[in-house]
Image (cartoon, rainbow, N blue to C red; front, side, top):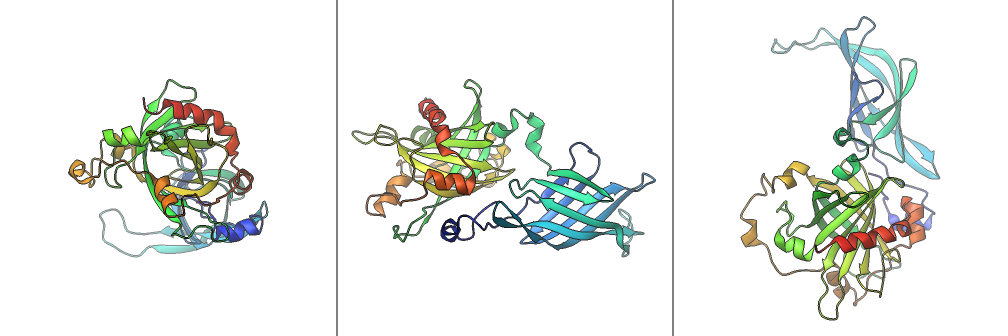
Length: 360
C-alpha cells in the first residue's frame, strides 16, 4: 500500500519520499486473456512465475526473481521497477510421478521488465519478448461489472489503524487507535448506491449486531469521477445537549486494502465535514464478504453476545479524554490534497446525505 515511512518528515520535505509496495497476486493483460503471471513481493524482492505458450502452442512456464529498483515520479521515489531474465524448465516431474529435479534453462525466455504504476499498485507495464503491454492484478470484483465493482468491493470486514497525527508533540498519548468496520448491505435507492454496515462490537464478531447498528451504524459511497470511497461511522449518538459525533473516512481503496484520512465532526452546526482536521488512516480487509454475509461463519462464530459490552462507547471521546479534552491538530485539507490527492471538501454534500441515511 502507498504509505509514508515517517509522515512528519514527509510533510516537512514537501512529500518527496514514499514507501511503496506493488500488489502481489495473479496478473494478466485483460485484452489478451489466456496467459498470466503470478507475482509475489516481499519487502523489495519480487518472484514471478509466468504460464505461457511457445511458438508451437505448447504450454510452458518461466520464473524470475530479484530485487525491485527505484524510480522517481512526481517528486517521490518508489521501489517499482523490476529487471530480470526468464528462466525456463524442462524434463521435470509429472503429476503423481516419481520426483526428479528438472532441467533448468537459464535465460530461456529472454529479459523481462515490469514497471509498476506508482499511483495504482494493481497496474503495471510488462516488457518481454520484444513487446510492451499493460498488465493488471486480477480483480475478483470486476465480475460484478465496472459500475458496481467498487461498491461490492467494500462488502466485508475492514481492520483500521488511525494515526492521531501530532504537530510538534501536541498529542501526549500513544498516537495509534484501531477500528473495525463491517459493510454487509448495498442500498440501491440512492444514486450512487450506498454500502452500509457498522462499527463492530468486537474484532471477532464478524457481523453487525442490533447494538452496533443502534449506536455505531455506517454508510459510504464511491465517487467514480474522483475514484475515491467515502464512508461515515456514527461514533456517538446524540444525547441530551451532546450532539452526535461522526468519523468521516476519505479513502483510496485497492483490491484488499486502503489508505487515506479520517475526520471527526459533530452532527450539529458547531462543525461540519470538510473542515478537518484530518488524520492518516490505513486499513485492510480482515474478513471476506462471505464471512460477514454468513454472519461470521468460521472461527469467530462463538457465543459473542454474552461476552461483548453493550455500553455504547465513543472513540473520539476517549481520545479527547486522553488529550486534555481536545483533538490533535492533524492535517489540513491542503495537506491531504498534496499527500493523498483526495479533495475532501468535494464530498461535503454527499457526506450529509450519508449522515441523513443513518439511524433508519
